[in-house]
Length: 425
Ligand SMILES: Nc1nc2c(ncn2[C@@H]2O[C@H](COP(=O)(O)OP(=O)(O)O)[C@@H](O)[C@H]2O)c(=O)[nH]1
Ligand SMILES: [Mg+2]
Image 1 (cartoon, rainbow, N blue to C red):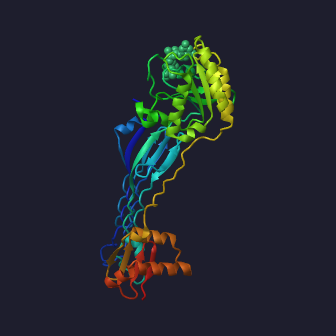
Image 2 (image 1 turned 135 degrees about the horizontal axis):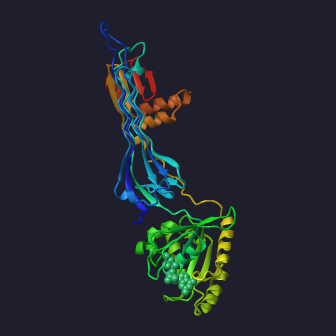
């Protein structure tokens, strides 16, 4: 089965907690703090791999969870980092965050890697928090939590040229004649469900990849006949060869048939119609085709399309199409990739985030919270302006009041993430 879309759940590893511990040995009653650091949580990583060609494995495995970092231990023992999880995807896979639909990564090369979720940082052990005035720190940092998301994987074939057209017009026959590919050719519809790929050996340095896109039917853009599954595969092709049955063996008018397919492209993504398109009027070995070829030319050439009469089955006129495709590709050298627009923290609203205060030893106040952490991240308190903003923030958010309520006294220590300071009114 060909599967080119999948939804899975991914979760990064949390950081391990720092340890609170004190050195102990015979005859030594009060050793110094020796709590080790927690390990970093594992990352979630995607990697392009040419040994997988579909997303079928994700039908059965839907959860990818990186390992948590281990907590720090006694005697300055650092907890080991959690193992990362690597998700292997076929080259051409676009990864989106499911809720926003935003692009997290577009993997277009073998071996290309992207970190989707970073593991949480490990917390520091209490050995880092001793000061001359506080030699028995009972505080250690907690490990930072990681994130989790539902993601959508979508495979979008990477090919320079896409052969489009209704079923049975001769797309697969054309591909088999001009490339090394061996697609199934038959008289009935939907023989091929996956795009077939082949390489056109044009000229040295000008070889290109051609894909036969099956399954385009009327209503495809609304999902008829798995339409979306197929339309997804034309999104990266730079040039289209639009094959039409000029002999009209299956009935229908060739001009109308071309317009119908183009209407589907446009409805799916208007931009697709702006890409160069070559019309290949096929099956011209059948005498009835001649009249239609003239009609197709008269209709489409004034609209800017190049029209070529061919007979794919008897290999007539194919050189001209390949030449035209190669020429158009020269004007379209850049690959079509999907820009990443997913930003992790964008939905966090600083001012609505609650904070938390923990008190250790009656004189050590630890303030945490997403909003506070973010504020620290963008404030440089070494500058006068930054420091003023920082004080104002603490007051307006009610953090000063909350500290007072917990009984903070002059000279006690306040810790806000990487920042530690003595409290003065
Ligand atoms: N007479 C004639 N038949 C053709 C030609 N090209 C393809 N066919 C036939 O049309 C049918 C459908 O071809 P196929 O390549 O499978 O079409 P696809 O569904 O568009 O991939 C097959 O029976 C082919 O042999 C041609 O140039 N002339
Ligand atoms: Mg086919």
